Amino acid sequence: MKNLKIKEGYIKFNCRWTKGRPIPAARLKVINFWRKKLYNLGMIGSDKNGIGFGNISQRIGRTDKFIITGSATGKFKKLNNKHYTRVTGYDFKKNSLDCEGPVRASSESLSHAAVYESNKNVNCVIHIHNLKLWKKLKDKVPATSPKAAYGTPAMAKEIKKIFTRPGNDNRGIIVMAGHRDGLIAYGRNADSAGKIIITANRGF
Image 1: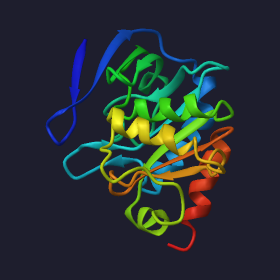
Image 2: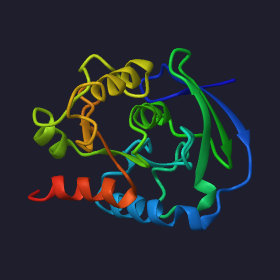
Image 3: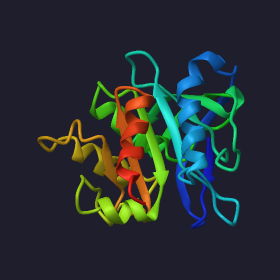
Image 4: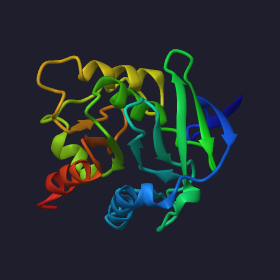
């Protein structure tokens, strides 16, 4: 099992990766469209140190498995099917996941898994970074605890807790209060999840 690290320098999650075949490009057409659009808006990308941020995923059928952008793909303007992988299993308590594809799964995969497990009607999850939008929404939409760091079991637990509160199932967007500038949008498909971000971002 491979321990993956992020910029703070400590272990965030354990990823068991099986190198496998690329996902058919046709299945990625819509989520790749939105990934490119959000990249062009600076909501997905990489910082001055080359650390990637933001990702997009899509549920596989009626399961809790999903397709997600791979680790370290934020720096690429345009992705192809070699930049996506399948998350085939996960364990919040053990802070671990299994993935299969050309690349390792994003470090935010457990947060995506928490959304899919909590609402079976969700088929797309998008994680973006945008400080202005984060500040605008942090007191207006459901938010995780400021104590929950990103990419941790605590964050996944907070996301699941949000979905247990009446009226939150279909809000479509979550502020990650312990992950300054981080937000998660979700919807029945990529178009609905993406449009939630675009609508919220109007006026900036």
